[in-house]
Length: 447
Ligand code: HSE
Image (cartoon, rainbow, N blue to C red; front, side):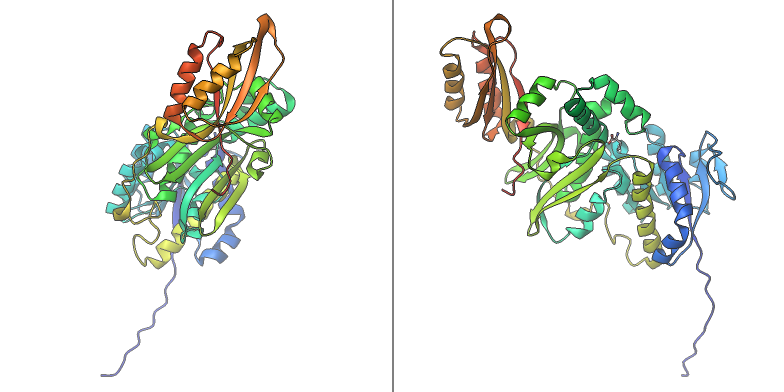
């Protein structure tokens, strides 16, 4: 039989996007797609067309020519001329409903919404798998740092042991300004809000909730576990004092607000808290609104990623990188799960337990408000010694008001449950006049 070749010309259709939300991130994304359209098409081999924007407020500064505008987001995601929905409205309920509707209409979704994914991602990913669509969320963690892609793809051959990140720019900005310029907390927070870095509810930044959302996503990608936001131990920076920042400096440490995820033989630690880290570590020198994530993995060892964690350009960079990935995915359609949402095959997620807070192991900075008389330090150290807690350094300052002295102790790593017991006993000593201030300490070395 003769081979008949039928040749026809195929016009490759553009991939069509709807951007929901034209605030800092949505506006930045639209601009970036327009300004870099030629370069992006060179990378994807395909044109990208923004067909819809979902917005309530006018943005005369943006070029919206030929783009349908509406505030009916649910109707936008049902349109046939939309392949990818970019959800950058933020918030919870509406974003959730819109994303679910988009998925159910067979649209891929890109989101920067860490709160929504950390709290409802498991359910949304399941729905996406059912409908053979992708949810991409590079912009949800550390803004412009491509940390999701790094762990999902670049480090895919490695077993990740731990990661530690400065993943909230507002918190880092506040700590930096307080330390360098002695500025008051509230003043710095207002500036971060004006710069567009802070969350709508700034307690999410200062109480560690935003970092806990991001850590939840990072840990799932690092270890292949379901999202478990509710199990993250979370402590913010609002109770940190200039006094402790100063003592930490004297001892050679800097206090950073870290998100830490660590794989141990008996489970996984997920924690967000102020942390003393040795001044000479690169990550200790990440200042202002910048973010950084350190990843310790085997066999590559320690790697560090640094960059802008928020702002229009940085976040748009991450959103548009996800657009490129999805355009390539749509163009090839090789397999619906080519790179799964959490980087592990959905049926291969592990049920490794997340450890309770008192099962975490970390070193400590302790500050005691003690009466200044002989034997007080001996009483404290004998409690620590009985609990098997090894002391690394002691700093005692001259007596201040009413003959009381601040005593600072640094310890070796200890099980949190043991430290809790020791602190309870120390606080019961008559010579100890106030609750013990405790800040965790991490050497962040390769061990
Ligand atoms: N509020 C966040 C921050 C914005 O300060 O890092 C980026 O997620």
